[in-house]
Image 1 (cartoon, rainbow, N blue to C red):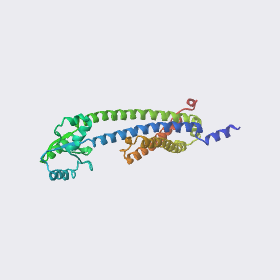
Image 2 (cartoon, rainbow, N blue to C red):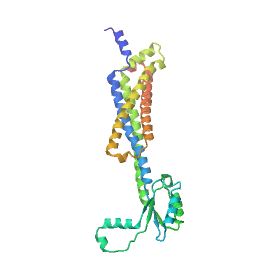
Image 3 (cartoon, rainbow, N blue to C red):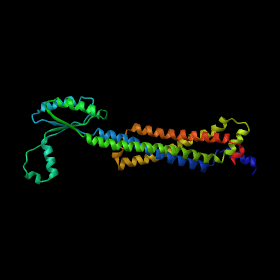
Image 4 (tube, one colour):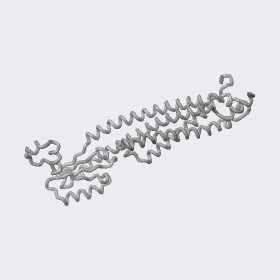
Length: 296
């Protein structure tokens, strides 16, 4: 075969298909792993909000409290900004006694003790109000009602939960940043290997007078589409994981808003395209800056 013809055929394709396929699959895997860590970050934040907003404020009703007074307190409470809609619940002291008997068994009935419990009201507050100062204001406002005897909050459990969740969130965020740095390095090296076979074509085009922009444009266009394909492959894998969680562990994904999942998907696609194009541009320009002797 004529060497010139061979060179023309090689220049018609900017890389062997196996190399580009390997690069796309490698980058898809990296984006897939980044997507998993991104989902963990989103889900951890949502779990913190979920558990915080499901911690109960407990209001003890005095024995002299009337139904009218309780209704008055309820009407006031359910119209406040801090109140989480639909969280109001009342537990009569008889129900609390039955729960105690259920926990301690039949021997508890033989003691024939008077009911030590009071009627209680429980409700939840929005996450923005779960701090010492706003909770103190809520407690003081409730104690002004004559029917309210005491107000309690599971603050020790909340503090322990937030401490552990924040540690996990920080660890996951730090690990994601480290993984991102490693991913960019791996993607760069993968594309460098994919373009290695065309270093002479790139240099020859420069030597015959082609501008750097003219030489880089075909590679960048291909990188754009390859980045999209890599991103969609990663999203396909993440979708499989997500629907498996929905079917088998729904409590892990129940509170994750869809708009954040769409945002994560857009970030993965953008990351695939951006890193692919940036790495390709950098590699092509690196070969253009090299001397011919250094290409061997």
